[in-house]
Amino acid sequence: MLVTKEAVTMALALQNKGNVANFLSIEFLDQRDDCFLFDCFFPEEARNPLLFVQGGFIASALDDATAVTVSMHTSGTKLPNSTDIHVTFHRPLSLGKARMKTKIIKLGKRIVSAEGKIYTQSNKLAASMLHTAMLFDQN
Image: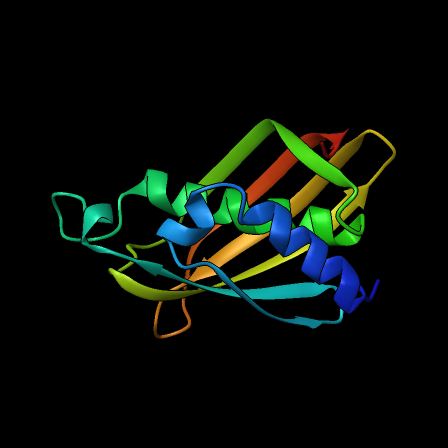
C-alpha cells in the first residue's frame, strides 16, 4: 500500500509529539513498495559498557519507527499501543548513524503487527523486531 504525502505528514506530526524521534534524530526517508526507510543517530548517551549501542535504545528506535509506519498506514488517524514487542539482536551496533526498514505485516481494525529491522553502517542486520499493538484513535 502506497501512503500519501498527507498521511506521512500527519504521522510525522504525531511522532514529533514524543521525545524519542528527536533524541535519536529519527528521519523518514522513503517508501519502497511495502517497506519504509528511516535513518537514526545514536548519540554517546546510548553507549553501553562495551562501547556499542545499548539494546534498549535500539528497541526504542525500532518501536518509534514501526509506530510511525502504522500511523502512516492509517493516515494519522490511529496510534499503536504496544501489546508485545519482541527484539532479536544479531550483532553489535556502533554509535552514530543507522538505517531502519519497517513494514506492516497485518493491519486489522483493532490490532496491528509490524516488523522493524535496523542495520549497521556497513548494511548488516543488527536487530529485528516484531511489534504487535492495539490501535487507538489519536487525540
